Image (cartoon, rainbow, N blue to C red; front, side):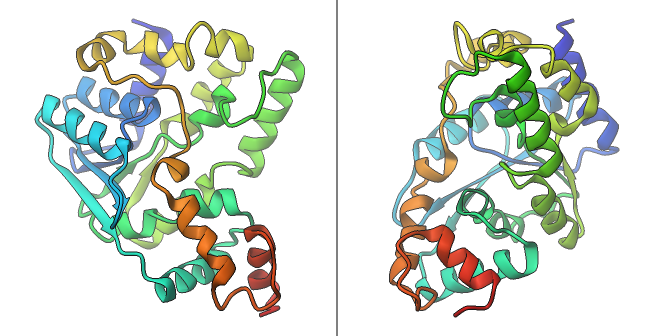
Length: 265
């Protein structure tokens, strides 16, 4: 069996002791591989995805297609665009969960809404895959040494994807977060490869090759893209510039986050 396939399946199997499983699902490569691991373990998880109330993204359309193909239950959570609620959500994430930059804020924003709907005990996420593949860096990393340094630092400090905060949020909801791409053997596997080896000739080729039989069934492969942009969360959060949180007339969201963090509003 393919090495990465084995590692990911084992990473899921080690964390789950029954079939009461949910997946934070986008229809992208990372959440798809989490689903394929479950299917290999004869687990039929329930898929959870979301959209802002006035916009249904391509992610939702793909998620519905995947659920239909594998005959899985799916819940699509609609997040209402209420400005006062948004302000309170941001305050909560910044003050109670130590979220201090807009990227992590945008990534984590929908999860509390989804968690409200989840009854399952185990919640699987594909977070950290982008960090290991380097797809959340802005340019190809030609230096393997520098690439590994950045990846190790990102995983250690949780600088990019908000895994540590999400784990806390899930734990507070009395559920268990399962993140196969945080498994140390999986991390060690990825650190052996350069950016080009992982992302050429196609992006995230190791995952595609690992579960090629499943990807061929679906024909839903797409290059990694920001869930926050695809769902228009980025646009929604830009409205914070005209909210009560911007009493200091800031020009960017990170400065507003810092004001909230330091109680300067």
